[in-house]
Amino acid sequence: MHQIIDKRGSGKTLRLMLLAKETGAIIVCANPHAFEAKAKAYEIEGLTFISYSDMYDINYDYGKTKLLIDEVDELLKAWDDNIIGFNMSIEE
Image (cartoon, rainbow, N blue to C red; front, side, top):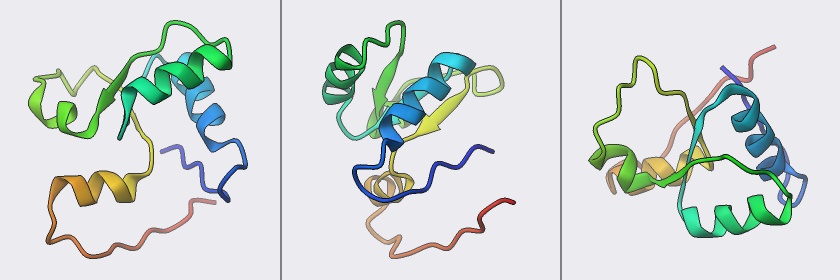
């Protein structure tokens, strides 16, 4: 699993978009329209962006559809207000 973990303003979004371009993955994010504008500014074409709610509402074949999540903690908050935290291990 790819992990892009870095400080704010460090280029995480660009790296996520480049990874999506390389792998054909859909980017799941809070604001797909903002991501479309960023992709245009980066001159990256052919990406698909969906919202967190779209991820649950649209019936994807998850066996074949690759997803990249922008700000996984925000996805968890959007999914259920009762999720109050998480931990994660950084792969080496």
